Length: 154
Ligand code: FES
Ligand code: FES
Image (cartoon, rainbow, N blue to C red; front, side):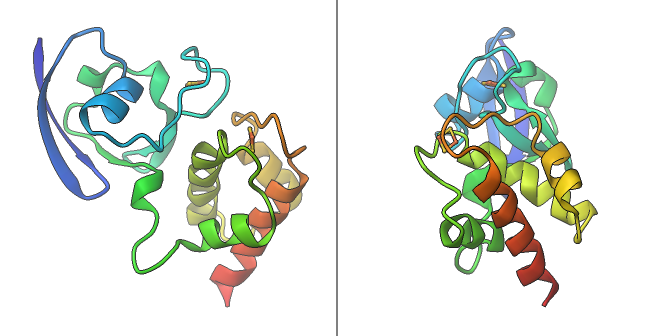
């Protein structure tokens, strides 16, 4: 067992974790933030995407002990005073069906807009290429991210 201290969505957590515990399972089971989904556990689907020290990662590809000292954002940390623009855009542009991919998609989109506030369609598609969606065909998701970018610029 190892002691770790992490910050998630501005809140500090201190826990003892098994050396083999994946970060995604720490987030879901210990921090009780179940908005971070598990689709594959092997780095393929992107459902477990979070923002880790400012960059998106797939949290099933990291051990919880490796996150010691990290600052993370999960989907629960997006809404501050009301929904985040990306959340509103996903609703307004019907970019959600079953919702399984949605938290990871939103975090990839947020990370993109932080570094590139005016992405073109190709840049958006590249930013979400690690996030698989079984339902939407991606078009509404791309449009939602374009819409969020427009709203954020105003
Ligand atoms: Fe992490 Fe699928 S659960 S990439
Ligand atoms: Fe169902 Fe994307 S909305 S997987």
